[in-house]
Length: 161
Image 1 (spheres, rainbow, N blue to C red):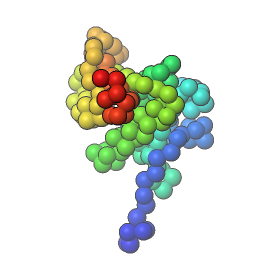
Image 2 (image 1 turned 90 degrees about the horizontal axis):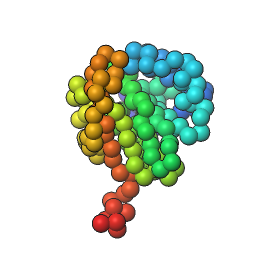
Image 3 (image 1 turned 135 degrees about the horizontal axis):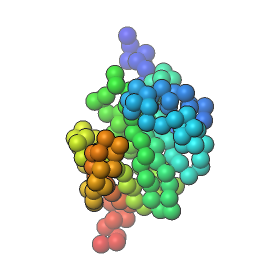
Image 4 (image 1 turned 30 degrees about the vertical axis):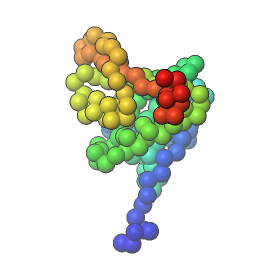
């Protein structure tokens, strides 16, 4: 197979036409975290951003968030189980943060299970820092770590110091 024949990933903004792909990936990667109605709202609401990594029109990863004033609240990140540990989560999260910055967000926040070391490492590598804990946040009783990061670029950060 020639290099130009290898399917390339593309990152796109997910819209309502991708609802069934989102539902399928949610089921595979997140055990059905959201219902069809919740995905409908996620993909239709203009204050929400949802980015996806596609290869040959197959959804490999997604990252979603809500824009609230000048803040992005990351609500979901999912990677197809057969495509994990290939950089898709970092790629789609990075694109989500870029889109939020372009939309005027100055900060991003998320919650992550305190026991989810892979996700915590991903978020740390993307500049997130733990700012607090929500005890017994998840339905199974696990704690959630509240994480934050600035979305200002480095030159803007230096100007404010």
